[in-house]
Image (cartoon, rainbow, N blue to C red; front, side, top):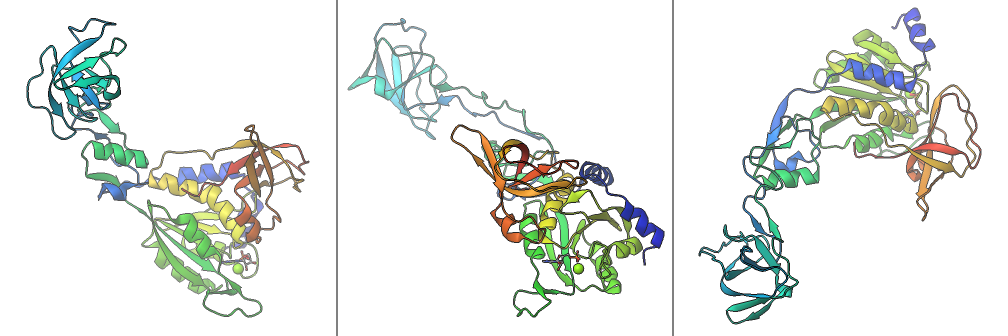
Length: 416
Ligand code: AMP
Ligand code: MG
C-alpha cells in the first residue's frame, strides 16, 4: 500500500497543466531505434536520417507546355518568325536528332528539351503549315522550360531527420527515386480500462454496470502510423491483480495507459499500485476535467493513469499524453493551435483549475470566429464531447464567462 504520508504528499499538490507538461517532457526521451520501410508505409512516420537526392530534380531540362521548342538566339524580338519543323519530342521519348538555328520541334509537356533549344511556345499560339511553323510577333522566347535541378540539386538535402512525413514528402521522395526510407520505429502503447462496473459490449447491462467507453475512445485517439497499440482489456479493482498485470504489460511496452481508479475513492488503487511497482512523477493536476491524472514509470515504461470519466480521458490525453507520445516518437514539438473567438454562450466556471469546456466553433462569412457551448459539461457527458469540435480554454483563475466575451479556443485535432 502507498504510505499515508506519500499519499498526502501527492494529493496536496495540484500541478498547473503547463508544469505537468514540463515535468513529462523532462522525464522522457525520444526513441532512437529505427527501421527501414517501403515509402507508402512511411506516411506519418518520423524520418530517422537526413535524406539527400542522388539525382537532380528535374532530372532533365524539359517542357512545361505542349508546343514547339527552338533556340532563341537568332530570333528578332517583337517580330513574327517562321521555323522549319523537323521532329517531335514526347514525354518519355526524347527527340534524338540535332536541332539547329531556323528549326523547331513539336514538344509535349515533360519531354526533354534538346540541348540547343531554350524556348517553348505553346501550341495555341502558332500556325502550322506542313513542315513550317509560324510564330506571331507577340510570342515570348525563353519561356516554358523547366531547368534541370531547378527544384532540387543533385546531392541536396530533401528532408531533415525528424521530419514527420506528409503526403507531399512521399511524393518528393518518390520523385527522387527513393523506394524505402529509414524512420523511427513504432512506439508500443498499451491500454487497460479498470473498474468492477465495466462490461464488454456483447454483454447485457445490469443495474450498476456500464459499458466500457474508454477503450474505444483511446483506440480512436491512439490510432496513428507511429503507434503500435494494444488494447489490453479490462481489469477489476483488485490491487494485487492490478500490480501483476501492470508489471507484465510494462515489460514489453514503451507507454502504458490505464483509465479509472486514479482518484481518491476506496476502490481507486492505481496510485498505490504505481507506488509499489514503479515511480510516481506526479498525481493530480489543476485541470477540469482531468484532475486525478497520474504520471510515472514502471520499469522502462512511461505510465499514465488517466481518470475514469471518458471526457476527462480525452482532455488529459489531448493536453498531456499526446504531447508525450509525439515527443517519444520524435515528432517536432508543436503547440496546439489557438484561436480567439467571441463566446455566444454563458459559461459557468469556478476559479482554481484550468478548464477545457467543449464548444462548437464556427467561422462567419466575414472570417470572424464565434464559439458556443456544446452542451452539458459533466466529465461523463459523451454526447456534448461528440458534438464539440473544440475546447474552450479557460484560465485557472477565470470565473464565469459572459455572452459576448472573447475566449481562447483550441480546435480538436485528432490526427496526432
Ligand atoms: P473512477 O476514476 O474509477 O472512479 O471512475 C470515474 C467514473 O468514470 C465512474 O463513474 C466510472 O464508472 C467511470 N468510468 C471508469 N472507467 C470507465 C470506462 N472505461 N468507460 C466509461 N466510464 C468509465
Ligand atoms: Mg473505478
